[in-house]
Length: 516
Image (cartoon, rainbow, N blue to C red; front, top):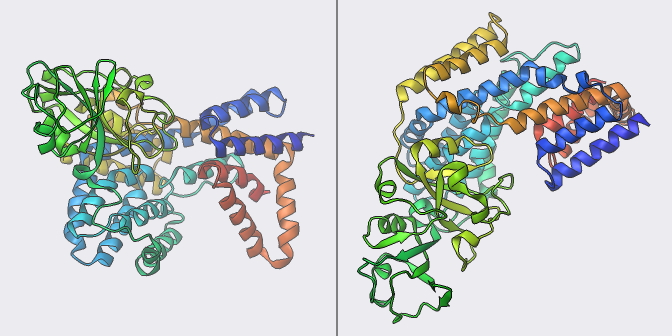
């Protein structure tokens, strides 16, 4: 009965992970509560994963990655990449994948991917190539690079921590670097020789990403009392010069059709579609104001401290399925929405009323302090900034040096990995590579809860005999064909589980079975 109870709970958890009916951390908490209430685990056993040193290691890696990001080292990498790549697309692709894999061996791979998307798009444009040719290989390279070191991906750290709990030796920092490098080299060779030919051929230089200056956005423009456009017709107004397309005119409670000879009045709100460059110019024109979800003061609009960012609504984003007015972004994040882009669809409603969907892109404005904090939120994907930012690169070199010192100290077994990485993370905060107030904000707490909870679930599978039952089934079916087939069975099981679950969760489900 206990085995059936645990396996049924696993099936329910997988279904919830797949459907995203509830956030992954809530599913994990509920699973722990049920295991305790059902008498499968004691509270000490259920919460043991939260006291594991893997939680400290992962939290520290997030802090160090944030310090490297804020230092601008990856931005400099993009500049060097363009020079080293030359005009040969294959050479550029190979160098790109090798460099991204190298970064990903020591940083969170999602962070590395997010930081390198903008430089790669720029490099592709400068060569007259579609960014789609490089973005998928970029994503693969960041994943493959994580196989080279213990901290390359959270899954490696989680598995190593579980091995210690199971009474086995932990994984060494560079223990699988050799096979990891083979995997990276094979992946690069495949993408250069074969893989890129299987990618869709997107016509045009930047049709996939539509570059920041070309992407069409929906926005609202209000005509103020002192505007020279008052009394002008749409045809003769400045908006036509700025490459805007007026979709609707909102005059009080009345919606008017935007006819070419319709006269504009003070207080009119125009629903327009136009490129970012035009929206930036509108901010400088007297008598016209971009209406966001919160009005910006004139000082804020013209302040050099203000930055404009593009934010992508991802499947995991908390912004998804919510109306902009309901999100209250000015109060929550200190940013205001200037415009919305929905690729391939025409939006004809007020900005505040738009219900966000996966793939929507928001053009937002806020202070540099707020936008910098926004980049490190795990539930928000920042595509790039419109305004340039300055980074203390010298401080970034110090952060990189701290990381390398921690790696050397742990690999030489001078100090445990958890102590070395935690010391580096604390030093990153002490040298002000990131503000102390943001040190906790950059940590992806949901992932830590997931890993700690799934570690407890692995304990439940072992304790009830569910792990031995599954292992016995796999071994009895495949052992007659050899040990390699048994390994292949576990590989296939893990691959299947990583479709609806996170890779760390899938590994922690299969690991006790494989040990058994």
